[in-house]
Image (cartoon, rainbow, N blue to C red; front, side):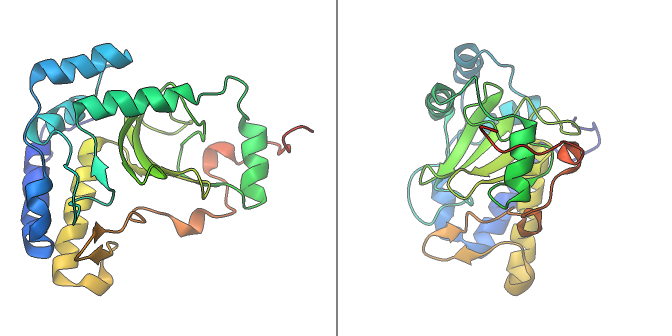
Length: 232
């Protein structure tokens, strides 16, 4: 939930733009112009969701990012309104109603085949997911409206399907932007001490937000589940 006295999305984007101007000025032209209200409303109608107010506000500042290098974000790009609909529909087409549940997920975590950082259900094609950006189609960010216990509806999740990594980047889109702004600012002062890894030719590395200490460790919501291998 956005507190009334907290920095808003527009000011968070202003900080990001200021940080990029210091760290990666060549990426600034790739920040897209605002989306109109009809385009944002069309996303909700097409996907049957109500977008969080902070994400709607973000689209009114930048309707995603354009293609090109260096990228202003730790992905190839953030989707525009049309891309959100297209990518989310493609994601949902991969949904499996018989997908593995908590017992199988616990087994996969215990055997180091799945990494879960935070309250996120690793359900590929989940209907409660709205895709917002990707890197090579492998690493994706999505808004999660069906979080695991302890999560927040609308939280932002990073998923790398190939590597079996799922992690909550922030409890809201606004918090994600603030986190990114802070890390850009820290990189401008001390690149070696920042969580960001910025290549001047390509942009921030998509590993941003990855939690390496989550490997082999169950999140709290999965801790007491009895593990069971798929097919047992």
